[in-house]
Length: 248
Image (cartoon, rainbow, N blue to C red; front, side, top):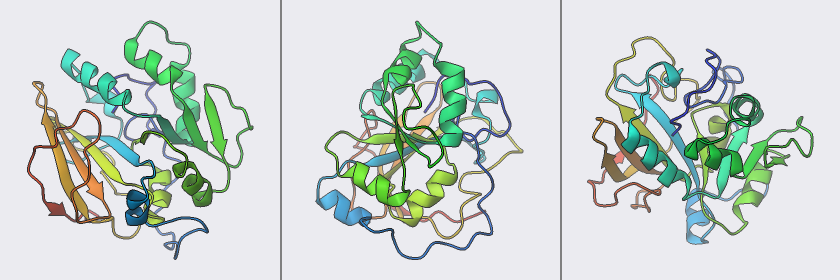
């Protein structure tokens, strides 16, 4: 979840990441890349989690959140608290480059200072080996991501629903979704999961948190029917239940 607002660009994805092209119409990838294990196996083995965090309006829009997502002091403090529970960011090139351009030079904002200092893992076969901004380039797609998950450490967070989300879902590499639902109706715009082919994994509600502004943070465990641990900053005492995400 991003309280900061990057330079507006209608190609950007839900929370600052740019859409790298529609993925609709592509044939789903069958099977998993070598070395990629199902989510259930990863959890049992104690591997680090990948969490996707996305801003969503009441009517399901995720596009251009800087135009409609307002953060009060409580929401900003919660976002910073949440960020401190992660070991870094997982990004595609189309997200990494515009965020770096918008935020790398910013100083004195506690949240953006934490973002700038955080480790970034960027999935790309075209970026240079050392792109700067405290980033490590991952080459080799899903197999490289599976290798990253075998390293010890806290969870990694991915902001927004992008083309990388599709690849992660196809290989069972997203453990948790965190939807921050804001009390606004946007109307037009790209909707959550609208660009994804095939079914999303079954989701189990594992945590809720309501903020004074009316924002509600819903945490779901992906790919399992058992309740998983909530992400940093989410309550584990909320109601639980399974849900299926269907394409609009």
